[in-house]
Length: 95
Image (cartoon, rainbow, N blue to C red; front, side, top):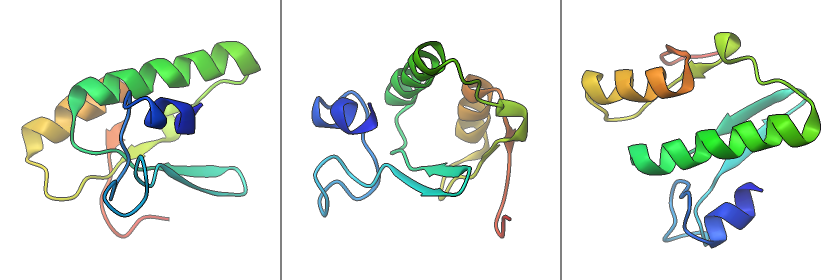
């Protein structure tokens, strides 16, 4: 779903100039790290994709256990993204 959305420019990961659509995610065991560019509209699209995933799979994303970690983003922008994803703002280093 992420690759298809990226190919249609609905979302964009990091470094799209290096990898078509950008780097979107890294997964390890039951953890996933999602990479998005600083674009609140595309983040809304991504949240919709997550909702579709929940509905199609029957699985539930636990946003309470999720952290938003940003690079070079001002606090107001950080808070807007954290509110959108209903999660807390984390910081480096993370576990």
